[in-house]
Length: 396
Image 1 (cartoon, one colour):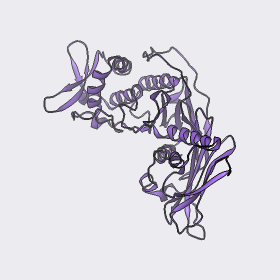
Image 2 (cartoon, helix red, strand yellow; image 1 turned 30 degrees about the vertical axis):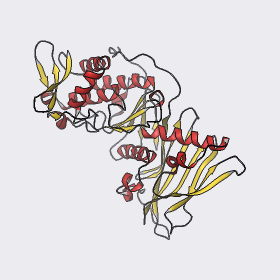
Image 3 (cartoon, helix red, strand yellow; image 1 turned 180 degrees about the vertical axis):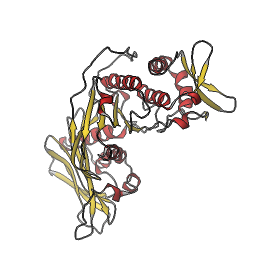
């Protein structure tokens, strides 16, 4: 089960804050406030509350990484991905010890809640892993009203029977939907929006899809960041191996945001830091460099793993979908989007000072509402003392 603690409260002297852009506030942005693992791998009947910054902790084998994988899977389904692409090994998601029924069927169930202008909207999905991978049931609800419900009626057909709220001359509309896609993501293409009921269904589905789609799984790999990289798209990859290329772009595009990044690097790295540069090498590649301010420079190849991971995660928190390799909903104005960063082993290679600086920056960015962070750590003490951080203990 998941046991949330209250957000951490300040203790001791506060470290200097990196200045953030002004203009916080605005309308409620759709975001995921709870992840539900009803029956998924090692989890049964687990609800994971999600704050602006959430740290999942617990002993080895308690399912911290599994919870992140479930979140990422829902996000990809919300973006319209096919089940086979999201779950290449679906049997690994079946709860441990689950026995097949008389038809040799086994599966798993996941869900989430999206908060936003429509209030809390719940999505629950049942997936059959054996003998064939398919969605066998889905339910979208708000305020106790079932807005969409699907069920597998005929195992011989590759469709599910869907029924969605209409509130017109007919209370519901029924139609088949494919059994390898999330029905909620397909509703905007199927619902006309002519009645109040249909408009409510559309609004709830769009809130859920927008909340799910902007997710960036991030696992910085220091060895990849140490070598020069070709100048390319300037879109940061999940492994952050093209960090120097992204710096080459962001330093030229937004001087103010770059200076905020330099201030954060200065707070978390040893020695003086006057500038963080992408240095061209004349062969179409660039390498990352710290300018020490006294004529000396340290290229990324000489930095430790903790410093490089801190650099990468700081850049992720201070940028957004325009820089990160994500596919945000283009039809939604940026002011209504929230990017969620998923990071397994958040504290890996970081020292206590770097961890405190990184979590503090994440919490301050989370206050603004445009970015959220869900990470896993082995030691819950790593996250203590930082205001705005929700610590969730996962028990095996």
